[in-house]
Amino acid sequence: MSAMTNPLSMFDVAGKVALITGASGAFGMVAARILGGAGCKLVLVAGNAEVLDEIATECRTGGAEVTTINARPSDEATVNGLVAQAVEAYGRLDILVVASGMNKVALINDMAPETFESVMDANVTQSWLLARAAAAQMKAQGDGGKIVLVSSARGLLGHPAGYTAYCASKAATDGITRALGCELGPTGITVNAIAPTVFRSPLTAWMFEDTEKAAEVRKGFLARVPKGRLGEPEDLAGPLLFLASKASDFYTGHILYADGGYTAG
Image (cartoon, rainbow, N blue to C red):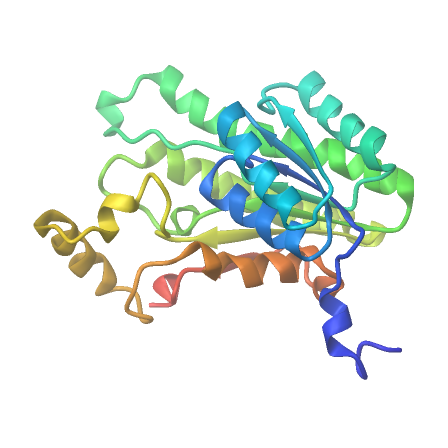
């Protein structure tokens, strides 16, 4: 049956093997829940062992096959090992979701060069290493694959409150996405990024609170968001499933802004 007569089949990822880094973070947990719930075999990677076990247990309870790796993708050897363990567990790798990363906020003259470098390493170098290792495995398999990086509206827009490291790192992530989309196009591997703005997470929970400070910050921020609200984790679910599935086979090298229209104005 063709996709034209069965459109939902384009989003079918059942049986696919998905490697998700940063699985203990807000977006990583969304990825685990959505892809696990859609039938993927999961390889969840995170440095926070306690939260990793919690999300793995939740996904297993929902019926997903889950392998956990308590590690951070900090260097080439570790990253190559993550892909190798995914293949050892399930025989192949179909989907990579890079949800790991960091943000350090400080005005430029208050930020140590080492801090800048640590943000660039976590958000840029580690994304590059993960994409490199996954691409090698997917090319060896010979039937394509899906690489999904995490960018941000800050890759496109600046911020006055000390975001030089984060903005630079996400702009670089966008560059990697576009370059790899071009490079890997002939192989059938698609490379795209999801770029949210503020969405509910442990780091942004205060912005959702009913306090005077939160209300003031929300008012200023939402004046630039056409949808008129902050993001929820569920807002990232649809874009992720699209980018991880056959539905996006002709979509590569793109940044998908899940931002309520923030970057449109």
